[in-house]
Image 1: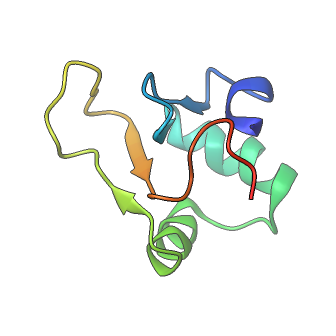
Image 2 (image 1 turned 90 degrees about the vertical axis):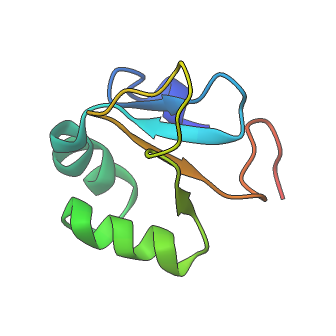
Length: 83
C-alpha cells in the first residue's frame, strides 16, 4: 500500500480501491520509482505495467479522471488485498 503512505501527492489508490493513480508523473519517475524499483524512466514503467497485465484506464470517462494523471488497473491488484 505504498500508494497512500509514501507520497499521496504523487500516487495514490483511486476512490474505488480497484485502481491507482499517478498524479505527478515527473515526481513519480524521479522519487517514487527509484525508492522501490531500479531507476527507470516512466515510459519503461508503463511497458512493465503492460507486460504484467495492467490496463491504463486514463481514457475512460468518470468524474474522478483528470487528463494530467495516469490511472492503472489490474483485476488482481486491489487495495487491502494481499496475495
